[in-house]
Structures are given as structure tokens and as C-alpha cells.
Image 1 (tube, rainbow, N blue to C red):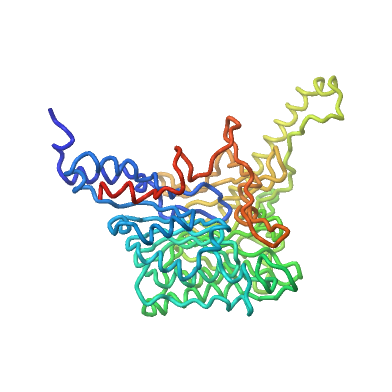
Image 2 (image 1 turned 90 degrees about the horizontal axis):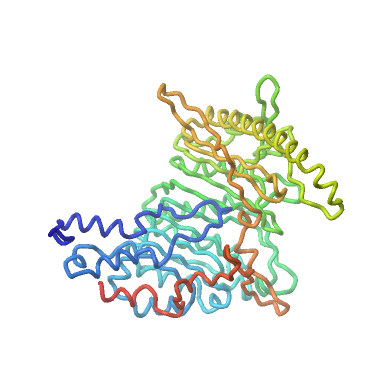
Length: 508
């Protein structure tokens, strides 16, 4: 009777490859800064591969140990990996997610420890760092914080296979310094997600979490981004960094009336990266860390749809139409997706469901219930049809200027249930059998809660009365109302276990 072992080695190797969930996770696995999905990186991704390799000696020898994930959530775990991990396991790691809480990050010397740890993983392709890393900016310094951590690349080679990097840490200085450290030694870098301060930051003299008269530090976003590219070029024989994906977090609009630099930043990105395929730039409110619009398009239907850009200034000019905006930005011909959080508005007002009020009488509510629901459905249908027509026309205008676009999205602030939430209307450029391309708007928008599209990391860091920082995360409940455990405790596993390499030694 035929069995699994009757298959050729190449077939067994393919089976092993596709039993690893890593094969089904895209590179990069991250999205824009407004996305707060759970990380794809989990040590569980390779469980089926490990089980398959453990069936017999032949399968173990044929199926390579590869595509492993490592999630660092405690300093103790990082320390154990640096001292005890088998070499074959280190070489099999493809993705790493570093997320240290404030209490643990104080024990982690950010830059030296980071390079010492990362240089062990020769085949690392994706690295995600977010949360809080210990640095002199947080816990006190005696000099200008912008120069408190002067970075030097290590003499040894590391990150030679890194293709995807995401850095989103609490400290605004480290959020710019860490990419300067990790991007230059990565010659194969293609996908990057970073935050740029690009504004004047006031910092207490004894740290971000300290007290005292603040020191004012000015940081220019364009200069910072250009420095990253220049450092990469110096490290790689003068060649140009050929990014395909770039996700930026950009500071909010200045409150002092000075020109908003968002448009100039986009111009420079397109100038520096001529082969860019996907570009997103996100900004959040300075205090509440809520998502805010990048560009606002106001559409009005007359004989045809007409569009006007609202509150927009780029290098002294004020583009008034979509055509003028794109002509000013000069996007590269390779661009397939562009998401600067474009908010679309029309002359119509979105109808909202009204909640039952204690000021109503019971008889009034039920007597008008059917008529009010019918009226709401009719007005909602008129509004939505008009909105989708306007968005289709706006997407056509974008495609006329950027024919390489494959898909895009428009944002609508406020849903029929809440004025604080968002509707995300996605569109796709579809080519029919005659070769004519036209945009198609999704039938139903993706409804995004205000909390989902906020900057989660910075909202969960609180400062107590002693000036100490700690993670403040509200209790999470599942669909049944039960409290959810921490991600690292799934299936009864303890974060203190040497998850990842102890269970691998018998199959390596």
C-alpha cells in the first residue's frame, strides 16, 4: 500500500514548505500605521512543519528547518536566546518581533544589545520593533537628547538578508535613530515602516518620563529621512536604496500657522525613491493620538463631478484640484498604491441612526418607529449612491494622473452609527476584455472604530505620580465576555518557557 515515504524527496520538501504557515504570510506582514491588527509573527507558525519533520529520520533530513518566527516579549527570553539557542535554529529564523514592556526595556541597553542580538540571525528577512526600548532619552541625560545616543554601526556584518523593517517605538528620537542603525547594513532592504518626528519636541531635562523645564529640540522630517538614505548609500558602495514599500508616520499639522510639510515630504519621497510601488503616510492628533486626514477632497455634482482640495499648501502653492495636486507631487510611474489618508466629502450630510432617548415617551417612540426607519433607509440610500458616484469620479481623476495605480481608498469620517468612527471605501482598478480600465468602488465600506485606527502604543503608556512609565492596557474580553489572556499565554503556555528552541533541538 502506497505511503508518504514513497514520494520523492522534492515532493516531501514541497509538503514541508507549505505546512509552514510562514509561507502564507506576505512580506512585508505589516501595513500602514493606522492599522492595529494582531501581529502575524508567532512561534506557532512552524508547528505543523516541526510535527512533519518529526515523523521519521528521512523526512527530517529532507525538509529543511526554515521559516521560523521569534517573538521577544521579555528581556529574560532575549538573554536565553543569546546564550543557549542552537546555531541551526538561529539560522532558521525568518521573522522577529521585538515588543518589550517598559518595565523590561529598562534592563535592555537599546542599541548595543540590539545589534549584538540581531547579528546571530543570518537569514532574518523581517524585523518588527515596537513598544518601548530603554534609552537615555527616557531615563535622563545631561546633554541635548538628540545627541545622547550617537550610533555607530558594528564592525561585523549583520542583517545581510533583511528585506522588511518596521520601527514604531515610544521615544521620538529613537524612532529616528534605530532606522539609521538598522537600515544601512541591510543591502536587500525593500520594505520600510518608520515614524518621523519632523517638529519641535519639548523634553524634560531628566528624560521623557521626567520633570523640569523642557529642552526644545527641533527635528526636520525630510532631513532625517534623507540621512537614512544617505547612510545606506555610503554603506552600499554609493548605490541608491531601492524601496518598494514605505509606510511613514508624520507629525500633525503645526498649530503656529506655519506651512504644513506633508506635501513637501511626499514630494521628496517620490524624488528619492523612483521605483516605489506602495506608499502610505499617516498622521495622528498630537494629544489624543487619533487618526486625522492627510488630504481632504470636497466633491460637488453639477453637470459633472467637480473636486476641490481643502486646506492644502505645498511649498507655497495651494493646489485646488486633484490634477494640480498630483502634478505637484510628481509620483513615480511604478506607484501601485498611494494612501495618504484621503478624506472624501460631498455636499450631502450623512444620515445617522438616532439612539433611543430617555426624553422620549414610549408611545411616541413606537408610533414613529416605522416611518423614521423608512425615512432613514431612503436618505441613507441617496447619500451612499451619491458618495460612491463621487468617489468613482475622483478615482478616475487619480488614474488619469497615475495610470499605474492598481487600487486605492477613500476615507469617510463618521459612520451611520458614530461620528467618531471611520468608513474606509476601497476601490480597485479593473481592466475589462476590451482593455479599458476603470475603478470600481466596494459595495460596502470597511467600518473602522476610532480606537482601531488610533496610535495604540502611545495611548497605552501612562506616567504615574512618581514620573515612572508603565503599560496601561484595558482588559480585553472575547465574544463571550470572558477576559482574554495575554498573547504569550495562549494554549496554556508560559512566557517564561524557552519557547522556540527547546522544542526544536530534537528535530534539528
